[in-house]
Image (cartoon, rainbow, N blue to C red; front, top):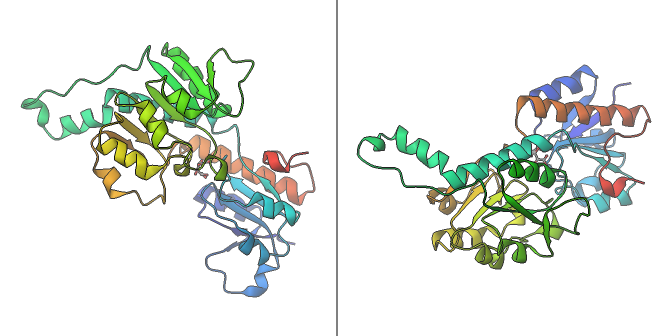
Length: 312
Ligand code: 8YV
């Protein structure tokens, strides 16, 4: 019998094809017009953008799995899910390198002003003007907020650029040679580039506050590849406008895909549309891992990548 599942965000075409090939009946929660179908749904599937709260789960009495195609699952009320005996899976590991690559690309872009230089040439400004000098990346100081898988992969790249690496997180990691700071504020005071790679959610909301930005200072750059919610965005816009911060390179935003027009107008920013894991290869690997979790669930086998809160 075909299993009925519900998508809780848009899904890439190759994921939809894989679901169809496996004979799942896929409902879309924004278009559900048959209330009878709600009780037939046994699993939810969505990307890191999915929002699943208690209210939605109450409408779905037979859901027992939420399979997220993404490493971040801050949109999912995991406590509410666990209370109802629902397990949550995600896709860690397969996207680590891509996210670290983009983070480092953003470090280079904002420090060396690559997108601005590209616009300068395209606009024909080169014939009459000289592009202003940028700032060094090699040999400078890099701070990482959140030393998980992605933080470590960013550190590896920074080490190849001879950067002095420091970090903050829940605790110091005994196996790492980098300097640990207890708070993001203390770390920000000691670095030129501050890269945010911590997970999103209530516990990290506005962690990069006005005072962290103040410490990073007039020569400091902020790079964010985690979640928009981690940065106090109005404070960031203010700091950039007042030039109390040198610049920011952001892949994630409050209320994305809508991006604050003030931020879009600023010259000292590099903005990308949440593309850190968006390579053909990695998105396919993420979809494949999501399918593995779904298949294991219906085959009553151990789930490959449960979120930490659902392990053990
Ligand atoms: C995408 C992400 O948002 O993995 C994450 O947490 O933010 C991204 O990879 C998305 O989940 C892709 O499906």
